[in-house]
Length: 240
Image (cartoon, rainbow, N blue to C red; front, side, top):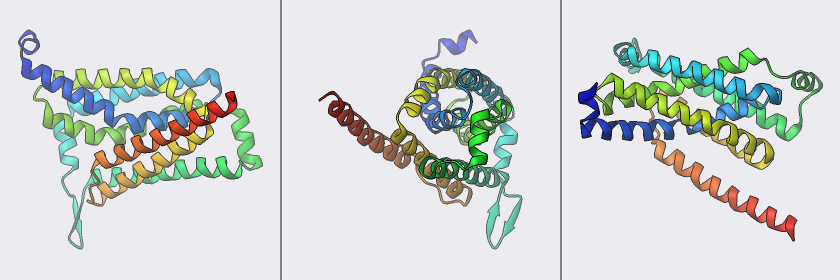
């Protein structure tokens, strides 16, 4: 371990992998903010912490199962020339869930919840169900990040350290982002549209139509900048 700490190449791979893990966690943080918004205020922070802690454990276990993770990318059946792997199925299922979740939230934001949904909202979302959603979606997002980690770092210790740092950053960022999204309804709609876009990208990956994440993050950055200008203009109008 001491030899690793004295190797500049190890530090370079650690910093690179940590940055990538944090960037790849942006869409996960957005989902966490939306998922926990259904909980009573006093349960949101514990749900985020427990869910992300469970997600950290799952990611570390995935890193210890690198050979199994790589095998998920191998087709187990071929249909009309299309090689279907377990990774494809997981990505498509995760993408469909994200689209369904975001579309449901958008409908309720625009149309308003019906009486049954209002009763569920007043009672608060099920604490355990939110934690399970956070862990399962992080598992879907982790597949590509774990495979990326294998390609960048040669040492398991470096991969685990990078994942731990990325999860800690997500824990620190989830609460302020969640509060900001809840305080600005238009931002929440934008975040939900991001989830739909990420869900479509996951499904496209599952169908072997890879969408470069750089395009997605560039669209998020541009839309976020426009939304920031709109919020700034609204604040100045209220002051005047």
